[in-house]
Each structure stands twice: as structure tokens, then as C-alpha cells.
Length: 436
Ligand SMILES: Cc1cc2nc3c(=O)[nH]c(=O)nc-3n(C[C@H](O)[C@H](O)[C@H](O)COP(=O)(O)OP(=O)(O)OC[C@H]3O[C@@H](n4cnc5c(N)ncnc54)[C@H](O)[C@@H]3O)c2cc1C
Image 1 (cartoon, rainbow, N blue to C red):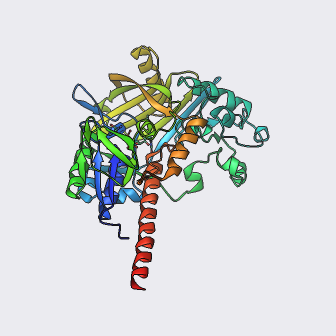
Image 2: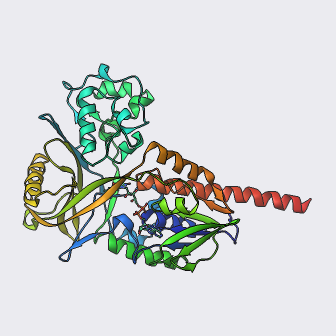
Image 3: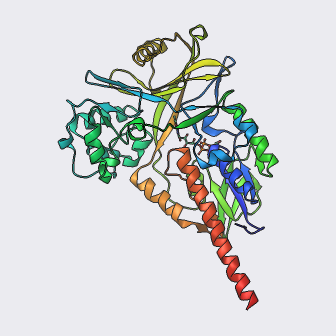
């Protein structure tokens, strides 16, 4: 692969997606500038710091088995703790409580859900229509649970189920029957089996930075600079169409011309600059509580639990260590709740999941953390992704419709490779015609 010397890339957004894309391009000898609007890299992964204590803002494991992870040099890998991905869930609706340590999906009991009650087709048009595939007990409880984010399941696409960890449900004690059903695409996309059941000899490896993500991104930034990447912080990018060219601006400063753009952040300013329609921008509201766990009770396993329940406002728990200290991050549906009430519920859930640590509340934050897309948003973003080249600038699809970072990064990696192949094919043609 030998991209043209004149090829240059602008990456907008210094979160994990932008940083990894920049590294990938630099590895191939391609000129790349990364602009980040804030004073630091890291985006959503940056630590929450309270009274000098450092916390992960949510469960965000790095996936060791992904090709992009291999781009990280040993100096950075040394600062990561690698472990077996470990998760669980509590599903507690209408006094039927199921607890598992083998998956992070909703789990329903056999007596509540019968396989013959599934609908004929999985329909992703809205989250509501997607949920109607399931028998009534699952459908009505998950529908009410989604509403607690402040989101109407009728107004967002069914594909948002993945972000909420409800794209698949597990039916306890139905593993053999579900294995057969999963040969049909609709059932495969909606029913889960524990990873250990499908792959008894395998494990999923994950990694977290031992000193927190802020330290990780500092190391990553230094490494990126050493690989020739131009990293520009405090550079919020806007873009404007001007005749046959796209202009890049940061505040009142006009930037160089770039012939490739990776917009690795919120796509709204990009859509505005290119005169696409605006998105519906449905936000799910969430609040997060941060706890120290009592050190005298020993270390804590890194483990992530999803909570689906009509008994508590908590929807996620994450136990881990930063700088050798055991911590807990708790996500809840937003609301003006008393921290003592939340702490009591955390305590009950931890006991259910087999944790004995004493918890000490440290701080809380409230945010609009989840962005859900509607069917019309999906059409706009698909149109943008399909446009590919606008006014001589190649615009890569930065996975705006994907939730997980691996999906975003892999989508970008594929397009970079395809771009190089196209260029190789073109330069081959030019050489042949010059020779004849
Ligand atoms: C609560 C929660 C839990 C999640 N858990 C998981 C998980 O377990 N696994 C998973 O794969 N995914 C998870 N995700 C999704 C995941 O966070 C994202 O897919 C991914 O990590 C986001 O990284 P990013 O680099 O794409 O974006 P971000 O981290 O949002 O980074 C974007 C960066 O761009 C900058 N920026 C924004 N606008 C501009 C501009 N105009 N000019 C310049 N810079 C700009 C921002 O300051 C930011 O630094 C979770 C998301 C949430 C909200």
C-alpha cells in the first residue's frame, strides 16, 4: 500500500476513535493532523476526579483481541492491566428476580416466557416494534424500563437496543432450544446464550489502564507525536462549503486544506457545515455515583453488571481498581434522588451479586450521556456516510450510527484500507498508460 504523498487527513475528535485512527494512518506513512476541541485527549473515557480520587466514568474496557489494540506500543501496554472480561446482570421485574454472573443481558425465567409466544418477524423500525418481537412479559417490562431514560421507544430506531444492552435477552434453562432457534437470523439477533456455553474453552480478554484513562491518554499523545502525528488541542473544528472546496475553520482561524476527513465525534456540526438536515437528537438522561470500596476488605475483581429492574433506579454497576484502590461506579436513571437511598440500593445489589465490600459514597454527576437516533436520523447519517466525496474532500464514515468503539474504529480502518487499494489501482493505471 503506497498512498500518495499529497494525501493528507484531518481527524476531528481526540477520543479513542480519533486517536486510534490517527495511529493507523501514521503507521502507513500518511500525513495526519488530529484536532481536539478541549485541552486534553480522551473524550468520554476521561476519568472523573473527586477529592483527589480517580474513577472510571463508566464501564469502558479496551478489547485486547481487536486488531487496533496491537497498534499500542509496549510502553503503553505495560501500563494496562489485562484480565478476563467479566460481567453479570440482575433482572428483577414484577417480583421475578434472576441473577447471573455469565452475561450482561436481561434474563427471564422459563415460566414467564414461552418460545411459542415470539412474534413472526424482528422489526427494527423503532425500539418499540423491535421489543414487540418478544412475549408480553419481556416486551412490557423492557418497554417501561427504556422509558425511564426519558426516551419513548416509539421515537427511536430499534438498533439503539445495543446501546442499552437489550439487543438480546437470555431465557433461563432454554439453552438447547435457543441454540436451534438461533439458526434463524431474527432469533439469532434477539436471543442470547452465555459466551461460555457457546465457547467453553475461550475467554474474552479486556484491558484497563492501571492509573486511569487520563494517564493513558497522556502516554498515547506523546506516542502519537513521536510517530509524526500533528496533535492540536483547543481546536474546535467547524467546516464550510465554499464553491468546489470544503474549508476547515477553528474559531476565526482558517485551517489548511485536507483531502480526507475523519469526523470522530458528534456529527451535528459536520451535517450543518455540509447543509444536511438536522438530527432529532434524542438524549437519554443518566446520573452517575462514584464510591470508594473499603480497602481493608481486599482487592476487588473488575466486573461490570447490568441491572434491569422495576425495584431500583440503578441500571449499571462497575467494580474495578485505579492506582491499586478498589472503586465502584454506579449509573442510574436521572432524577433528584437521595444519595443515601441510592447507596442502600447499591448495597443490596452488591450483596445479591456476591460482593461483601463496604461502600463509601464520594460524588455524583448528572449528564445527557446516551444519544439515540431515530429512523430519520438514520436516513440522514446513512446518506452522509454514502456521500464519500464532497467538494473534492473524501469523507469517511466514522461509524456515527455505531455505538461501540470497536465497531467505529474497525469501520474507519476498513475505509482507510479501501482508499489505499483504490489509490494503488489508480496509480497502476497511470503507470501503464505512461509506458504504452
Ligand atoms: C455510559 C456509556 C457507556 C459506554 N460503554 C461502552 C462500552 O462498554 N463499550 C463500547 O465499545 N462502547 C461503549 N460506549 C460507547 C463508547 O463510549 C463510544 O463508542 C466511544 O468510546 C466513544 O469514543 P469516541 O472517540 O468515538 O468519542 P468521544 O469519546 O466522545 O470523543 C470525541 C472527542 O471529540 C471532541 N470533539 C467534539 N466535537 C469536536 C469538534 N467540533 N472539533 C474538535 N473536537 C471535537 C470531544 O471533545 C471528544 O474529546 C459507552 C457510551 C456511554 C455513554
